[in-house]
Image (cartoon, one colour):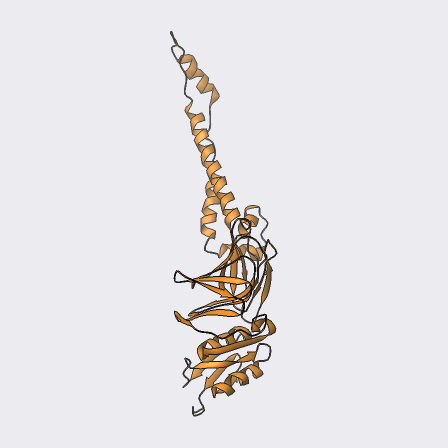
Length: 304
């Protein structure tokens, strides 16, 4: 969902739904104070007749005196304040980031100003500065996305685990809590993690789980598996498999008497929940139970 509510709010073009969403945003209070300040400022009243009378009352002898009209000075100061506030409003409008968000069981595609493409997996968010894009091609990512980057200036993806930098290539970045993986499918990708840079040629990955760098195998195909409606894992703790199942099907997963740190290798289909559950339970030697939107995985000897 594209969000650039400030400009529309200043021009009175927000719909009722957009107005409610904007008023609930953390930035709204600051914008409201700025708008109230500019609307309440006005030049003080200036009495020209009184000023003229004061001029006549002045005793002019040899040299002419310059009469300082204080209201005019005050007017200039007010005008300067208004100019600064208007400039601040312009700054806010032109630095407000565009945001795109996906919910559980939802995906989205974004075309950037340079025709680079981003494909968002479920439960993910990107933000970027559209106004300043030609000067700085940077995308902030929370979640997972596949990037097709048009050739040009350096293109960066910023996450809380590290930064990915390229010139023009195709790659996938997954940035979740305790999990960070970058896979290069075309060209060359630079990954900076904990101030250390790693170069990834096509067909290689960089994986960090719970702060530790983990060796990975060679990715299959020319696209991440989720782009083909399949979630694949190779020696990944079971808890991250359960988390991905939640994102793809919008269900709540819990476990009983299962070590969720056990490593899982396998895949599941992202369009058929029953098939996905079987694809997880069989190789992990667990059982499952569905109750509405809740899924329970349990060990074979767990009493029901």
